[in-house]
Image (cartoon, rainbow, N blue to C red; front, side, top):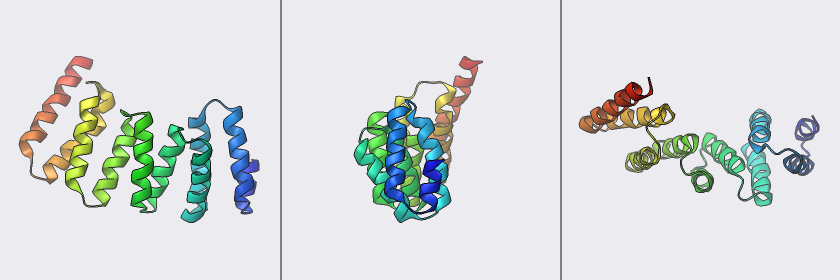
Length: 169
């Protein structure tokens, strides 16, 4: 509650201190960042959001969730260099994370770099096992393959999904 009040009255430094205290007290940064993400979304002021997350990142440079949320907000506000920087940091901590892979591919899509987008999906697919976990990455990859007229590759990926579903049933 304290963080909410501090953000509303634009006391960002005090809010950051409170968030840092939460990180020290709570062992689940995912939950803390998820709640913080909702709060920051209500600000709708990217310069404040960026400042808060950058400060948190400097205190917790190897925290996956801070890097992930920083990348998410940067992408939301079309700050592509920051998105790339922080999503790469998130991927360095969790290289096979589906969310991070999808954010990185979305970044390149928004930048109009379909070759890089394809590369992200291909690398992501090469690191996932053949379970349903990777099917969203595969589906997005298939969609991009079809958009770029690579129908044979798309068919191969569809066959992989069918085979995965047979194995997992």
